[in-house]
Each structure stands twice: as C-alpha cells, then as structure tokens.
Image (cartoon, rainbow, N blue to C red):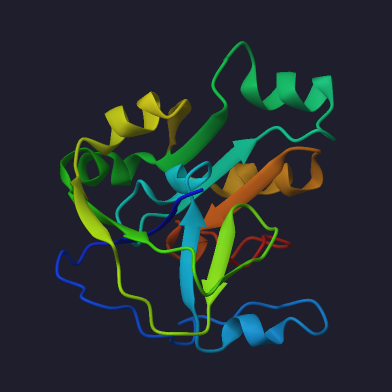
Length: 185
C-alpha cells in the first residue's frame, strides 16, 4: 500500500497537520475530521487528485452494491474503472498544468474507510516527490475516462445512485452553490 498527497507546490519538506479550509458536515463523533490533520490518498483512488487544485470534478466508480442499471446509465459502454467529469472551462488548464505527487510513509496514518482517504495527526515527512504533467493521459493510464461538460450541476443526481460518487472542489463549479440539494463538497 502506498499513500500520496498532491499539491501544486514542488517544495514541501514536511506536512504539518492543519484544519480543513472549508469544514464539512460530519457524522456524529467524526467532527474531528475538520480539525488539524495531514490528508493522504491511497494508490487505488489517487486519480481523484490528478487535477489542478481548485478544479471542480466528480469521479464515479462501481462498488459491489452497484446495480447493472446504474452502471449502464452512467458508464454506458465504457469499460473504464472510473469516470471523471470536469467543466469544459478547466480542460486547457488540466492539459497544461503540472502537479506534484508526494509519497508519504504509512506510519502514523489512520484509514478512514472512505474512498481511499487516510489521515495523520502528526507532522509527516514525505519520502519522495514526483512532478506529474499531461494529466489527461495520466488519468487514461489509470483507467479513468475523462468527460467534459459545460456544467457539473446535471450530475447532482449521481449521489442517489448505487455508484460511489466523489465530488472535489464543487464549491468552484459553475452554479453549484445555487443548486438545491447539491452535496456541499
């Protein structure tokens, strides 16, 4: 198992626990997740972060509970393991930007059992850093089909399906905040 943290900063020497910038509603007893932590993602779900930092995106994947109907409705004939949706306005930036993948040691991290997310309450020194460019090609190599839309708002219904849906930086998506019942992510 490998853990990573992604950044647009190539020179991070250590990660110091800090609270999230925008607190999320947490289940009872889990509000500590808004407190000072170092966040990491596992190797399987790292494609969630093959994007410029503030790029709003929604990634979908099947779980053991996913119905054939939901898979067909959202994936169609695609054989990709994940589908990533971004707004068309972000595609040029996605294509030209370089991000940095920091590999982190497993020691001190707790598995949140939620979409490959891990957290540490301690300062973490990275093992290595790697520059990643040509992000659309990297997504493809990891089995992720990239789909572009004018707006992500029509995808809000995916959270009521049997697919796993992860929304990242949706507060930056066009019209997302004005959408009734949209997940606040």
